[in-house]
Length: 35
Image (cartoon, rainbow, N blue to C red; front, top):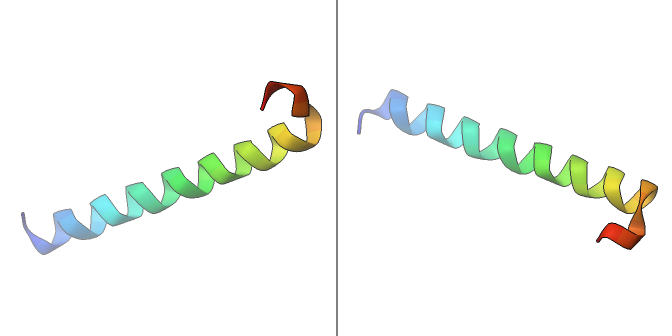
């Protein structure tokens, strides 16, 4: 892959992990029974 593709891939992964962690934090605060 080209370097640009590597950078874009890393950005997507990091943003996904950040998004996922935010959802987990909100979920734990709002509805702990679901987790």
